[in-house]
Image (cartoon, rainbow, N blue to C red; front, top):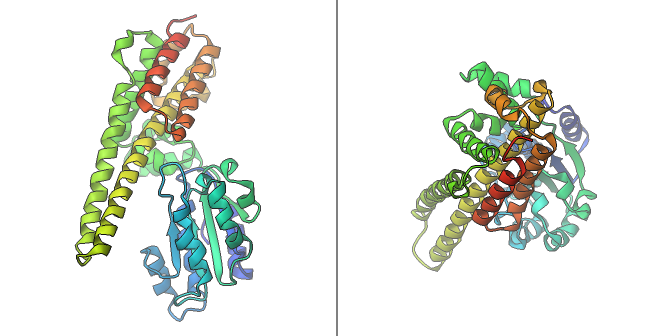
Amino acid sequence: MKLPDHPQARMVLSTALESGPSHAYLFHGPAGVGKRTAARAFAAELLAEGDPDPDSVRQRVEHGSHPDLTWVRPTGAHVMRTDDVAEPVIAAAARTPFEARRRVFVLERVDTMNDEVANRMLKTLEEPASFVHLVLLTEALGRVLDTVVSRCQLVRFDPLPADRIAAALEGEGIDAERARACGQLALGNAERARFLASPDGEELRTDVEGLVNAALDGGPEATEPWRPLLERAERRRAVAEEEAARERSERLELEPKGRERRSLERELEEAAKRDGRRARTEVLDLGLTLASIGFRDLVCLAEGADGAVLGIDRAPSLAGSARGRDPRRLREAAERCEDLRQALELNVNEELALSALGFRLAALVGAPA
């Protein structure tokens, strides 16, 4: 398999295809480094083996239309539900393949499995049928339950080098300084870097900088500097729901009227709402990550470590703000942003949490030491 940026993954998966695959793999590493692409390519090779027309198999896997490939995404915004695996994975894994020699199941975000889901999955992971292969994906290996990790062969995907990401962005027409900044801010995630280099990404950075600068200025509490970020997240939610609604309409056009259609319609409506919530959370997650990085960059400038700044395209404007600041307070401000980012998974009231964060940040860094 061609995985030039991931030598460990290339070695493990190539050996598996040559010598015989294991029944369960756990692909782990940051978002946007190619785990899904690798999982689809690996599944294609597993299903194509022995087929008289392997290229046709690979093409159908690429299009998501092969009957022996099941791809599972958690339906909850922050949790995988038992219904996500009960029939699609556990029950299906007991049935023989439709046409290939194998059945392949790919499960995304397995770090969102709770004990109940993991317990339901254990027998399938421990004693699968000989034709079953599972590929689990996660961006947070430390959050995956030990009972799951211990039953899988680990496949590591490393963060992409910032210079490689920057070079790709430059090849797409982004100027060098901005490409380098986005490559560093993305923390190894090529998809995130591409978004940050887009107009929408630039606007998000502006919203976040407003939040950081308001804290540094110690401005009036009524300004609500976090409001633009929250409104941007809400707009993204609405767009995601609209996109899902269009897809729902197209799918329902092919369904005959009746009870099954109504049931499918309700199911798709709920899925659209989940997509919207997830999109909203993704914006807030990235915004808070950027806020944390912003305070981190201020720490670097305050301590004279200019070369460690990630947002290099903003370094000149940050330098004045960093002068005379207490690095310890700036570091704590970065930690507060990261704490709230993680707390979003607990379904906190986002408006109240962001408001409280604004007050805390202003109290921490609102005036030079």
